[in-house]
Length: 217
Image (tube, rainbow, N blue to C red):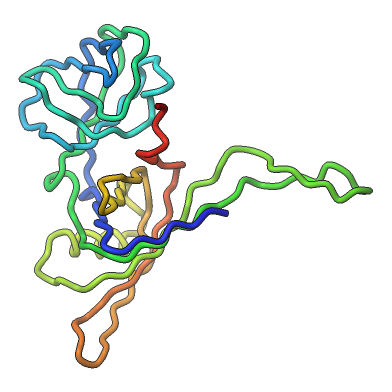
């Protein structure tokens, strides 16, 4: 079971509303692919883009950072070359500082979960992994900033019942990221002598997230 521990990691969480997907006009065969839509007004470099229904397995259901080229075109950073796609599918664009809110820079521990195991033999005690990978769980700590919209957003997410569908991104200091649908668990606030208020909490990805370093090369 893999574990990632990182200091100074930015936690970005959507504000409880997800944007309406935008129809795709075409996707080029280049690497990275150029995606054409009716208009890119309001989109910006480094926004997070989720293609769906394009028919390209290397794109659908995965999150990519955007590079806006012009008024109708953007690139999917980190994506590979592939078959041409025309007028099919959608992209959902999660805008940084608008749809996404930055909670703070935190210390984050990501705990991977192994697939289920199945016993192959009642004589040799042989075991093997069974099923798909499971979404990882997260624990995080940071300092409270009660005036910050991102901090307020993550507190609201922890208190929701039932939970609103949200997307969580862990943005590491080197620019790599992990992003996917997630639920925020309980959050606690504590005070230490001579320090500001700190908070700690948990989250769980509800689907296996996108790891930027695992995009096909």
